[in-house]
Image (cartoon, rainbow over all chains, first blue to last red):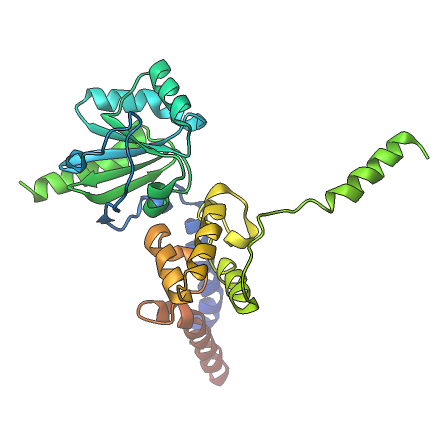
Length: 174
Length: 126
């Protein structure tokens, strides 16, 4: 019997070590894919063209992408976002802590994949969304936030995180 | 004294007078104490580990400013914590509430220790 206990004494710390080791080694991006669904916060902002925001844009499936002209990674994901917008995906921008002039110049120079961009110079809506920086992307279904990606949105993250969520809500609402 | 040495001493002497971060002014010391204890209990969402008190990234600055404003408008510590965790997730609270599923967090280490003790004790008897 004591042999079993002795082996347990060695095995238990080993199990603990392996468990925590796996958590530490695991892909750090996975930590951010877990997301608790919540309602889109209320906000009192206009878009980059000083127009009122039409909340109807958030009905159905849409993406809310946090971007800024000072953000380097936004430049990296810009081609992928452009591709998504061509595939009939509703893309709404959240211009974060930026200057209106610079933001418009940025879009003019590189192309505008968004149906409109909410102008949030102080980061008020971004704060309520729990944004920690740019870029970040929220997946929204009928005014409900159902997914969140921090950092660059690319084909890989799109496939692994957003596509399963989109499939789940479209199947549930058929 | 060489000019370069003078410049060096000058640099060391004058940097000590630069304020490291924004100064938060309170009417009384109770509010001030609450502020500093709260910001040391809220996790910086952009950092691997560390409180917003120890971080100067933009989102931590915003969080500190918000905590400051909420204290001034009379919110309780619990309300402020709820305000932050609603937005940045339950993991942003370094001192999880003593309730519900969090009991496992609080008692987990003791349960683990208990199991280990049991094993050691039964091992001795044999």
